[in-house]
Structure formats: structure tokens, C-alpha cells
Image 1 (spheres, rainbow, N blue to C red):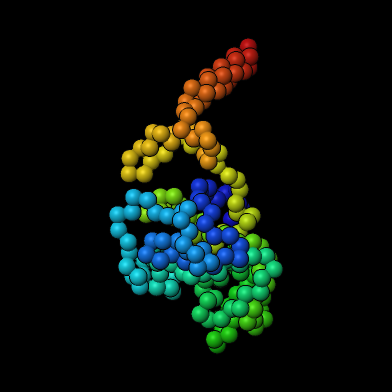
Image 2: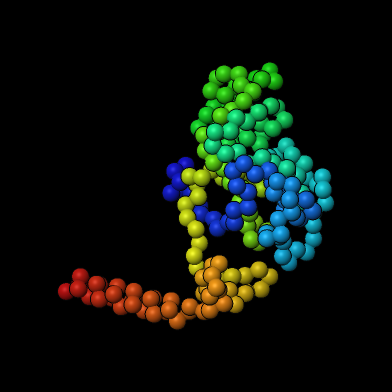
Length: 207
């Protein structure tokens, strides 16, 4: 499917190319170190380890959203050692993101019709999580995201809600010293100017 026909999601980049990431009891570890900057807020419960969650990626792993990995996030130029145990995690990377064919016959892995035990990665990959980590479709369910599927970066918060509406974050700039400053009046002025301009154009057309 062409990239411009896909749905757009707003997610936070947690794992960079070359990182080893794991989630243990709801806590995020990057390269074995607890990441204190990105942790769960308003977490009501933690899914127990070894409880298989429906639709988790890959489907053959006994993982869930609170206990995930460890996984290696490939970078461009890596040679991945692939085998029957880890091929389920990298199959979408190989087939969907890099357009190579993959088949398993008689316990052997065929990539582009050749038996392979290694695969050369052609893109950088990232692991994305949603801020509403209790109820978020993200890399835990999709798999890794290639660089060419990252289309932009958010700059402005129109509306923010967790359990309740967080009014102090609505109409604010993301990651800014002025994050607590409201810009509703600026937005209203822009909308009014746009509407006036639109009505003027329609009037000229009908003339």
C-alpha cells in the first residue's frame, strides 16, 4: 500500500537503530539500562510475565505489552543472524519493508529463493510507543518502523486526554518552555482570517 494511503499515527520514538530494548513489568530498558525519562503514568495494572497477549508482535512469542522483548533494533548495514527462532520477528522487516521474498521449507530459510542464515539490512528501523501506553497500537503490535515511514514530527497540542481532559496541555507547543501558555486566541485569529479569505474568494468566484 502506498505510504500516502496509510493511516497516520502519533507515537514517541523509544528505540533507535542499534538499540536493544525490553519492557519488564511495565518499565522500559534500553541497552540494559532503565529509561527514567519514558515510563508509565496512570498505570492501573501490570500484565503478568508469560501471559500471552492477543495480537502482540510477533504472534509466536509469549509476550505482552508490559513484558516485551528483549529485541534488537536493526540499523542499515547490519547483518542479522536469522534462524527459525527469530525469523518471526524479522519477517515483516524483510518482506514488507524491504520487499524481499521469504519462505521456510524443510526447516531452512529462503530469502529471494536462496538459503540464508544472515540478512543484510538496507534501512534504519525504530521502535515506537504511544504515550497512552495502556491503550495504544504501536510497535508492540506492528513491529519495527522503517525510517521512510516516519513522515514528520508534532509541534502543537490541540487536545490532550488521559483519564480526563488535560486542559493545561491543550493548545500548547510540544517540548517548549512555553508549554503551559495557551494559544487558543492565536488559533482563533488564524481561523477567522482563513474564513474571511475563503468567503472573499467565493464572493469573487460568484461574481
